Amino acid sequence: MNSKPIGVFDSGIGGLTVVRALMRRLPKENIVYFGDTARVPYGPKSPQVVREYAAQDVDFLLSKDVKMVVIACNTVSSVALDVVQKDAKLPVVGVILPGATAAVKASKKKRIGVIGTRATVNSNAYTNAIRQVDEEVEVFARECPLFVPLAEEGWVDHKVTVMVAKEYLFPLKLEKIDTLILGCTHYPILHRAIQDAVDGGVALIDSGEATAIAVEKLLEQHNLRNPSERIPNVQFYVSDVPAKFTEIGERFLGQRMGRVQKAEGFG
Ligand code: DGL
Image (cartoon, rainbow, N blue to C red):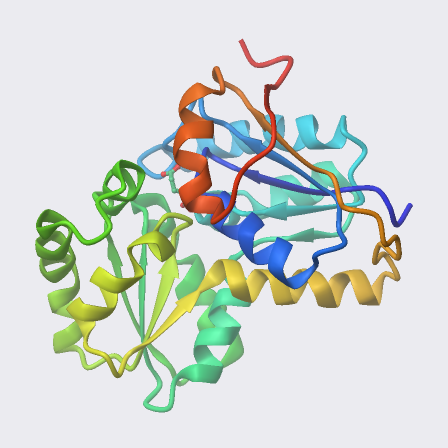
């Protein structure tokens, strides 16, 4: 059981930032990643559609005999955590509660900003999770849809990205937040532009990193850590043809990627 892989899924490529955090924190674990590149983005879609897609995504991971499921996608974690939990019948970790908990810990002024896709922000999932941890915290949320294509384009320090970041984040700056949750898989790629737009003193919380810590705790609790000293096997599957994913993916993963396979059963 313990040598079975951790299953990770996302709407597309962004979840590789979560895989990067998992590989750093849990270097012995085997991983199977699924990115729904044929149907990305999920962020502008309705909760009903995202829930339908999430059920299919998790079924694919279950067919790979995973020992637990990590929902790397903030949008899916916001609107379909229950769907995945019901289907999987295995330990499931989403990115919302770990990100919210880390933010509450970091915030001294109890003024937290959240940025994410439209679906994530509209769901209020982060606000609810933050209030669950500390009901006195004030939360200021803002959707930042243009960050997704900018990160995929690799425009990390481009003047357009700097301008867009200032435009999106100015209202949060006015609210004098001291902590900002990067509530979307793509945003860690634009870390610098985001930090500059909100001031150096604001703590940026990468939900992917917080999630890797939560995964480690869960593996401990369930006695599921892989004890093997062998080099782990990390497999990547996508629902569209793999070419673009492989090209952009290494920037998100922070290292070279092995073979990317087309997932069977997706068109
Ligand atoms: N992976 C999505 C998220 O974290 C961003 C991309 C999309 O809209 O599908 O919310």
